[in-house]
Length: 83
Image 1 (cartoon, rainbow, N blue to C red):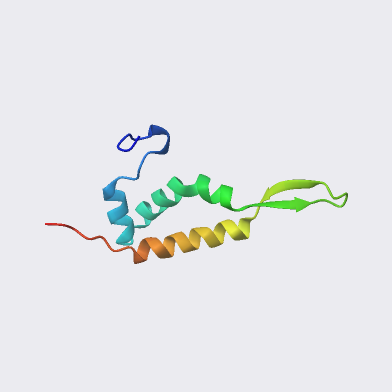
Image 2 (cartoon, rainbow, N blue to C red):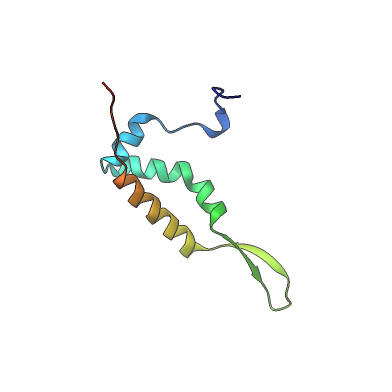
């Protein structure tokens, strides 16, 4: 299965990655948009109501923390061009 591209999970274009690592806000927002589903899934928490019944809820603080960490890593990302 190597070499087969899954259209459901399309890759970000190189130009977007390059622009985002240079600090382009529109490109950074495109990267955040690309990963928003994954970040939302990671930020889900299991909570319990007063009767002890569990339910899943989004933790907005966790989501923001993950977005901030992603932005920091985007800006630290160094592209290496081969000649």
